[in-house]
Image (cartoon, rainbow, N blue to C red; front, top):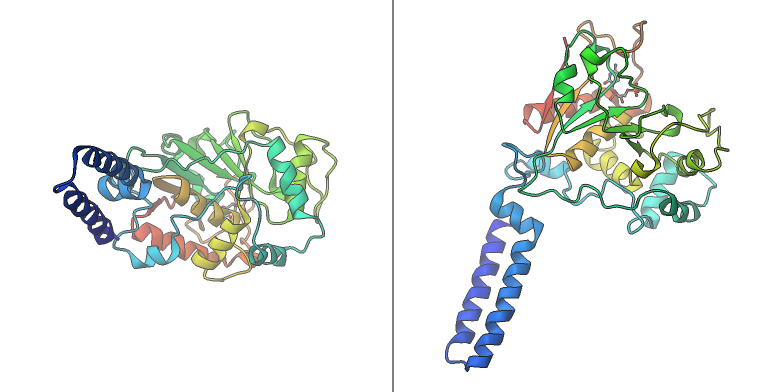
Length: 331
Ligand code: C5P
């Protein structure tokens, strides 16, 4: 790829020099103006800037795909994490894959059309580049956070992304108090404060209907189980993950292990796409091999269910070994 850019620039320069030789003044002027515009266009491309000045302003950048075939095979720098008005029409293949996860009779297109009259339609996080160093903490709910004293370290990140019901109140010393994003689905929803982005994982079309209902009529109180018809959250900070992003995670990262990825793993891959440096907390078993939540007393064995839990953890470990993320394992 590097070679292609340099060859391209070399060809343009040679062409300009060739055309300038012996040409009249006004032709010269036109050729020079056109070549300046072409050069400005080429050098303003994010991909060229990344190539010349680096993927981000941190010492090491998560999205730097050079020299790592394992990562290149999995990480798609062009994957779009968020649903927007522009990308909300799903291809047939994607629609049927998504329907396969949870069959639904709800008309997706009608629901999608309503979404962006209610929620923001911004292309957040498309600002990656050599001038940005965004650090993120992904905080899972594992009991290995208990007694970890990670709180201050977690809060020192630019973004702190929490998952499902994971509380902060009463656990600040171990998990911190800042929450910039909370990833949920209807069945795991909790109240959040005004500055937190609610990030919905739509596993099924009714999840999108539920989101609309929460901020309007509040009439949906059941999906396949009872759900909260209303939660406290800032409508202007709502984000929705793209079903195509879930398919990408399942196919490229999970390599089809399990039926669908867990909320925690989805959050981790989301962070790889919106952050330049990623620290991961609260994933995996505690020192005795118990899988439980840091906010619960009883230690029961975590059931990975459909998620292929240990495969997910092995990918997190591999990302850590490759220094793509830093996985804090608790005490
Ligand atoms: O239990 P819950 O799904 O709310 O936890 C959120 C995420 O935290 C999980 O998807 C998983 O990635 C991580 N977790 C873990 N080990 C635990 C509990 C949760 O890795 N014991």
